[in-house]
Image (cartoon, rainbow, N blue to C red; front, side, top):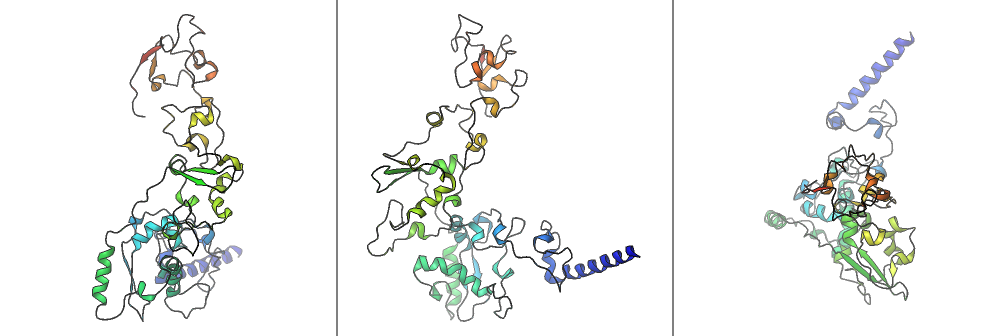
Length: 391
């Protein structure tokens, strides 16, 4: 009897779920459109129904969008679904997508997308009608304006409707074609990246702070958004400063920036460092691995990323100079010495590494004195030089 009751409950539950999931409104929940999305992502119970969906709070803070290049999106969008008094907005989507990389990328506008979903348009979630029960979610018109007005107030110092909307009238079609033509093929020009930026502070001691942008962006592989968080176009293009304000060494940044705001981008990695590590009496020279660590990088390691040896890209771990720290299990039987440019002869090919490299210090020249009193390297080589191939 108990088994019959359990089976009946399961059948009823499946029927309810089938009716909920296969309606035309819910097609996007069914595979393959949402094959990688678990039901528990949005539903707290195991058997949600149309009358009781048991929805959980949207995990906005935990949603991580996929990386979509600006070229993956449309070039121009016509946004006119809710416009009544004015004409539609000719929105330069690709141009905005390129500029948004400094302020969160796609996530800045498409804030509820996850890595497993395609990018959704605003009207997929925001209703066109303002007669809605949930006032916490803006209607479509409100969502559009909330996304746009913040930047436009900073950029153009105003939010006149016609700065975005076409004017209704006999010339609307021609104006629409003209704006589309102006936007066709446009993209934000490539921003030249500096190598070294030197900040001069008002402090008598530790006056200079040298920031090596190329090291952070290329050698350390730090993403732009790791430092440039939630910045807008005004960060570089603002010139209309308040009377009496002056530009600092950074383009477009007034001297009124607080000490905290200047240090915040750096503290995610350097919070535990001493002030004098950055604030010095004269501009610093570029980072040199040999000078800073005492271990100059040879041709085999100079092209590697720092994370390859030091782990996490923000807080590097100390690496011992013993090569076996990274290269486990080096033995004469498995290591091909010719990758160094020197192919060992028969007499030396079977020796242990320490026979020539005292203390396994491979950054020092080989020492022949352990076996040969009358021979030195590189005058006498234990083999023949070979051409190195691209690895």
